Image (tube, rainbow, N blue to C red; front, side):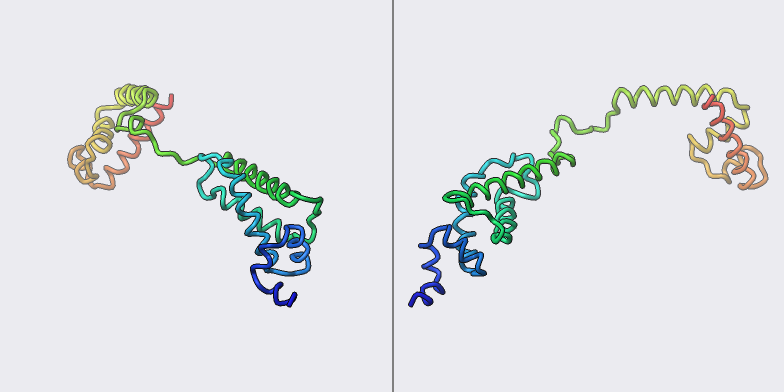
Length: 197
């Protein structure tokens, strides 16, 4: 009769955690399951809210509890049972460590947050970008002024007006599009050198 009682689930519910630990150490998976179920409920109540909301991206508190329980109960044979409440205290410490690990992991990567609508880019440039662009344009115009009329025509035609090399050949009196391409390349290199000075 006693053997039959051990195989039914109801007898595990009535046993103390210390008895379940002893049975689980002996390889009884049902005792381990009962222990798992019993500890999970009280751990969940204890751990509720301990993982900050901002850290709950992929994992939540229940996941951390599950991991801690699985890890601890896998190594139940090495658990040092020091009396009443020892397993719960041990599991709480395991969950606390998991929470610390998760906080460290999350703090290493940026947290995804929705951008406030008021802060969204509306196509406006920042003051820095506007100043940098203005400086670049000033240097471009000053350097363009130092080129010859022919070079200036090639650069403006190609860069600002997007003329093809065929069009530039016709506009500048060059015999082929290839000749216009070579002339544009020389003019742009000269412009770049002037801008770098």
